[in-house]
View 1 (tube, rainbow, N blue to C red):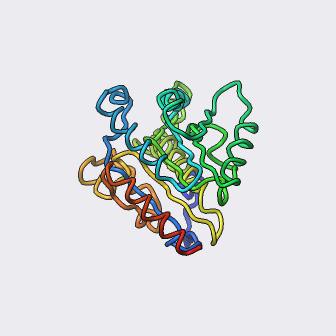
View 2 (cartoon, rainbow, N blue to C red):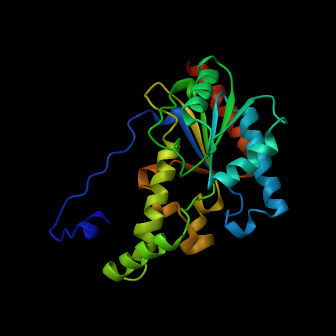
View 3 (cartoon, rainbow, N blue to C red):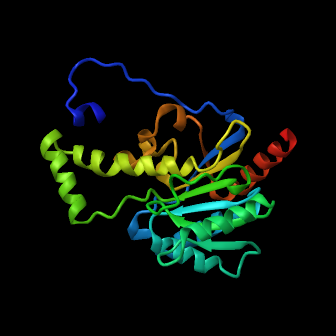
Length: 255
C-alpha cells in the first residue's frame, strides 16, 4: 500500500519489527461470536451472547478492563446494561465528559489494586496515545471490527483510490487498513513493557483463524501481520472465562 500510494516503483526491501516482549506474558483470544454486522447488533440472541462474554470477562479479569466498541452509541448501550449490575466501578467515555478525568480515575483504581471497566469506542480519544501500563489495564476487548462511518466524504476518498489504483483499492486503502491499524493500536494498550502482562480479546467471528474459509472476503484475519495473527487463539464464548482464569493464575505464579 505505502509503495503504491507514494509512487515508489523501484525494488525495495520491506522490514517489519514484531513485539520484543515475552509472548507468554500476553494472550490474544478470537471469540467465535457472530460477525458484528450493523444489521445484527440489535438481535436479542446476539445481544445476549455479547453480554455474557463481557460479563465473564469483567468478572474474571485480573484488573482493569478496557472495552472498545465500534462507536459511541454501542459503548453507551452496554454501559447502561451493566450499570448497577456488576460490583465494579464503570466509566463511560462520552461527549461532554472530560476524557482526562475519566482516565485519571480509571488509572487510579487499577494502580491501587482494584478493578474498573472503561466503556469507550475505537475511534475515540482513548484508543491510542494512552499508556495503560501495568495495573492501569490488564484486559482490552475489541467488540466488532469498528469500521469508520461510511459518509459522503469517506465514499469520495474510496472512489478516488479506486480511480487511481484500480477497483477495490479504495476499500482497502481508505477503510480496511486504517481500521485494522486502529484495532492494533487498541490491542496495544495493554502489555507495555517486558514485565507487563495482559489479555487482548477480539469479539467478532471475523477475527478467527478459520474466518477466511467461512466468511471469505469479510474476514479480517489476513489483514494482521503474520507474527501477530499467529498468536490468535480461537475460543468459544463460554470458554473465555477459563482462558482468563488460567492466564492470570499463571501470571501470579510468575510474579
